Image (cartoon, rainbow, N blue to C red; front, top):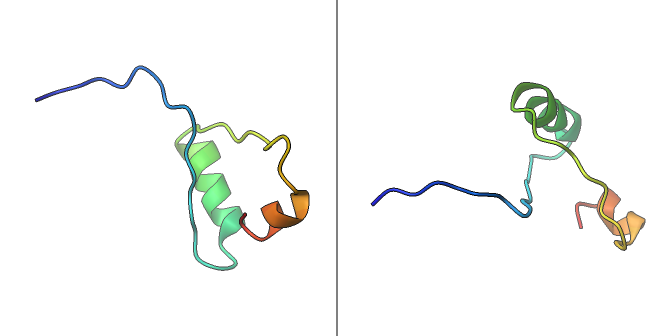
Length: 50
C-alpha cells in the first residue's frame, strides 16, 4: 500500500535538554522546515517546551 502526503497540519518535535538551537538549525536550515510562532499559547509554557 502506498500513499502521498497532501499536507501536514503541524508537528511537534522534542530534543534533548540544551540542544534546542542545534535542533532548530537542523530542521530549518537543512530540512527547510518553517518555524511558526504559536498564537494564543502562553509564552512562558513555550520556553518550557509546552
